[in-house]
Amino acid sequence: MGRHRWVQVAMGTLAAEYLRFVYKTTNVTIDPPDGYARVDANLPIILAMWHGQHFMAPFLRRPGERGKVLISRHRDAEVNAIVCERLGIETIRGSGDNGAEFIRKGGLGAFRQMLEALQNNYSVALTADVPKIARVAGLGIVMLARESGRPIFPVALATSRRYVLNNWDKTTINLPFSRGAVVCGEPIHVPPDATDEVLERCRRQVEDKLNAVTGRAYAIAGNRRGDAGHG
Image 1 (cartoon, helix red, strand yellow):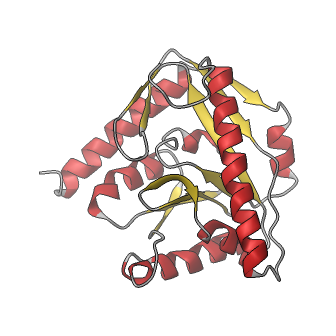
Image 2: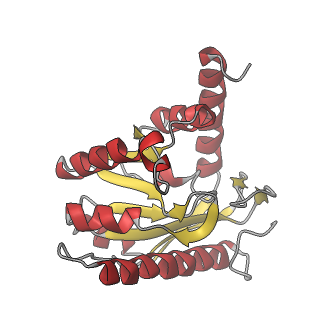
Image 3: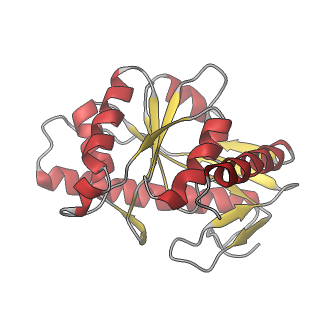
């Protein structure tokens, strides 16, 4: 049943309105307070976040800003794409992987589309994880930064009230009437002539900084363990 387009559209529309309600009823703290100002000076940017912690990401975009998000071509991701489009974010379809799977999943075409978007002053958001391995950053995002010349900003958005699924990425369902936190880390710049060694160093920076901003976001929202545990 979920394969029918009308069902996907209905589910995506309901999910988008639910997330809008969650955000409107959440008292959000931005940390640091000048986080958006630092982003402004670097537009367009590459926004990095962890998989499963990304559902509120469309609300990071401010009125007038243009953004695109990378979403898998798998049919299970159709609802996610509809949600983003309902919330004003354009989509790029494809996903990263290793070896031949990179081509099959549309990784090469998506990479080119992200480069084009950045060249046309769209910011691009994507999850940094290696597919199916939570909180281990892949090389794709740093390669995108190297080829585009745009900085990577690690970001996290957490709420005090949430439900966490018992799956590989601990998918977090944010709940309304929460305390919330948006944390924006320092930008990561990847040199245009970065060698494999430099790319690996930048990949580790993405991983470390994403873990740091995620821990900080949960601490501010009210979970002092600094993780996505059950609230």
